[in-house]
Amino acid sequence: MSHFLDAVAAIVGATHVLTLPEDTAPFTLDYRRRYQGQPLAVVLPGTTAEVAALLQLCQRQQVAVVPQGGNTSTCGAATPDGSGRQLVVAMQRLNRLRAIDTANNSITVEAGMTLATLQQRAAEADRLFPLSLASEGSCQIGGNLSTNAGGLAVLRYGTMRELTLGLEVVLPDGRVLHQLSGLRKDTSGLDVKQLFIGAEGQLGLITAATLKLFPLPTAHATAWLGVDSSQAAIDLLSALRQAFGDRLTTFEIMSQPCQQLLEKYHPGQLPFIQPWAVLIELSDSGDSHRLQQQLVDWLSTQQLADGVLAHSEAERQQLWQLREAMSETQKRDGASIKHDIGVPSSAIPAFLADCEAALRAAFPSVRIIAFGHAGDGNLHYNISYTRPDNAELFADEERVNAIVYDLVYQHQGTLAAEHGIGQLKGHWLQRYQDPVALQLMQGVKQLLDPQGLMNPGKWLSPARSDTSG
Image 1: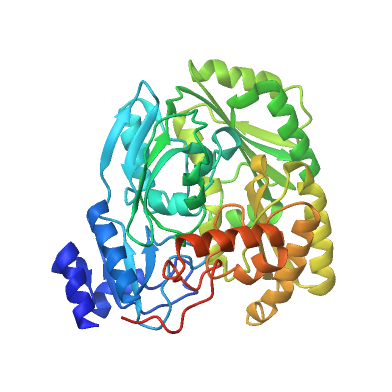
Image 2: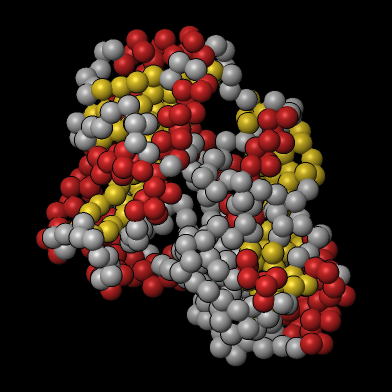
């Protein structure tokens, strides 16, 4: 194995090959601290050519590769196993801006650039890159692509799949797919770049992307509203779409237990507590005051339990901070069984009612924390117990998940709306995914990675126990 690491060092330079435990530690534990691995080494390539040479070497030597971006996966998708035989390829040095074309509203960046940096570079050119996530300061573009990330503005702009014009990908055998096109219309055959978006590094290693930009909005209208039920929230969503079209950028909902948690850990910051809180934002060109007045006039015609409008950028940020604090607040409150699910927006009220009834029948002391991106149907549906001791919580995880996922699919939904599958949900995907779709996915995996060396042990293939150098 030392000969293999010497060859790796010859490709990227010895200083970019990490083997000491204190150096590799940040790369071995997933974001939620559920999966701990032990890599053969962590390698930090600086160019696409180096990545290609690394994958060629790994294929010759039969060494498995675990691509890793900002290591913010909540499903263990970027964590090596414990064998000490998998090479983590971390992308942080491939972080350059390659091109920006404001006339074409496109930008080409390398996969290791953080989302926050991309947003900043776009803003410097008076453009918007609309993907927005809580982890945007550390997550990287390659990881966003590999999980088809969504976030807070999918309602208007779509997921990473919709935001992607072109990709550069190193295939498992070291060949490079050069498709960094800025075209929006191209009917010359199959759109093969789509294979790698959402594949979690199991088909190849994304090294760069050409992405869509948009005019930078100059006007925002942001409101925190209270409604009496989840059905009232979805009715409000439908009415807002009818009234404002694609100016409706964000529609977030938070259940009353969420609001109570926020009040517990951030006292005095909530404007009110209602059965459901809704955070909405409109964005447009022009003047914020005019857009805000349009929203106020329209809201005055609606039946709402309560509401506040942000009249300044500071007030707007205060409302957003309440929403963005939700995940951290729940973490402070203790362990929970988390679900990143999606159902059609119209099905949210029925799903919430059916799932709560089924969970309470099975687990009378259950507490449900439901919030998320209702505009696109993505809910963060998290389960804990009301009793002080949550020791039994994860012993019940499989039963809880079966109840939740059965009802998700009864309502035509998905068990992974924006966080991917990783190690966490592979067996559930096998249970619920259309078998023909699974066969097609596995066929693509076999075609591109017949030796199973790309991110093994995740949902497209079983872990390899015989991987060696």
